[in-house]
Length: 382
Ligand SMILES: Nc1ncnc2c1ncn2[C@@H]1O[C@H](COP(=O)(O)OP(=O)(O)O)[C@@H](O)[C@H]1O
Ligand SMILES: N[C@@H](CCC(=O)OP(=O)(O)O)C(=O)O
Image 1: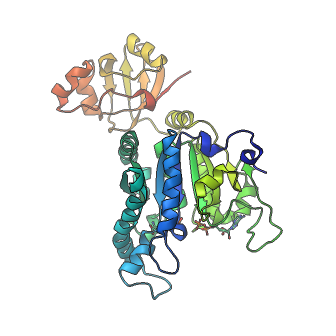
Image 2 (image 1 turned 90 degrees about the horizontal axis):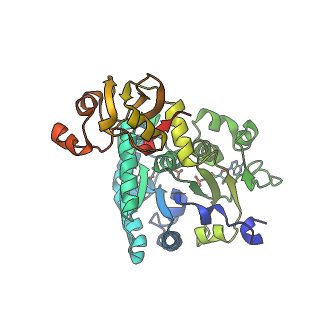
Image 3 (image 1 turned 90 degrees about the vertical axis):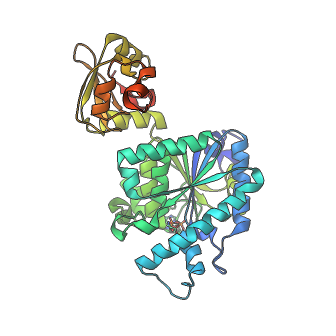
């Protein structure tokens, strides 16, 4: 019996601040008619609106463009499509997909916004930062971002293909604390229950071990080439976990899938490693190669130690070259590294504004990106 049924602690869906829901094609598209499954969408959006009403933020990663576009383009007769046909179907289906989401959120007066991303966008830091700022702005404005892979421009080799891992990247980018993968099964079992009736359900996974990967179809998960199945879900959970985000794998086909989770419906919860903010700072401190450094005065070094942003006014010298969004080292006037962070200006612009007050930046550059390094993007040394 789950904690929610026992009336013990509230479940992860009740406590998460920002949640990414991955909705697969099978849920969104009616297998018989090939049209959007409006009844399911309505029920999902009713539930999502209830989460929002209690102050939780919602991001949706939605598949379904290819399936909806097939019907629109009259490509339903065949078993499989060529890549150009899939891309054409995605182009035709994406607007139908967005229309379905808009209509489903409309009765709640909730607006939606389309974001199409490729793997490149999630792996190139500058684009990643832009996408992050867009998601943050949309959420701040009370809009639900609806994300899908930009299928029309990617080739087979560089596409995610499945939306599980895309959803995990979106969760990382959004700093979400919960990723919910709505599947055609209520969680991870010790083996595929469709093949092995003795398979046991796993309600909580606190570490993704080789054994867990093997249960999900290990080889696929490890090499990242799996298409669908549990392997991509565990690969997604691994990405989310490293970003401080928990993952919940559960059955999406129940009429009110989110209400069902809260009422204790069966699911597999994969714990988060740390908080999203701590994981993000660890990534800045440990995983990114610094491209240069800025040297700051004593006042700025003291401000950083208190968790403040680095303002241009406190910067004495800049050593590049680096691009906007790159990781740089921050040194104090004794040469000691006091922090690392993602800088908001390229090295030429940073050099020009070093020592300037914030209100003088725009006059110098013709634009301003605010502080040199925002506090959220700074990992301060111990
Ligand atoms: N260990 C396992 N536990 C649960 N399901 C598994 C396992 N191994 C393989 N599967 C299969 O994975 C399927 C879910 O993957 P998939 O159909 O790709 O889901 P979705 O359409 O939600 O992306 C299940 O229906 C199940 O048959
Ligand atoms: N991006 C594609 C779908 C990718 C996909 O089907 O992913 P998944 O739901 O994980 O199997 C689309 O919108 O049709």
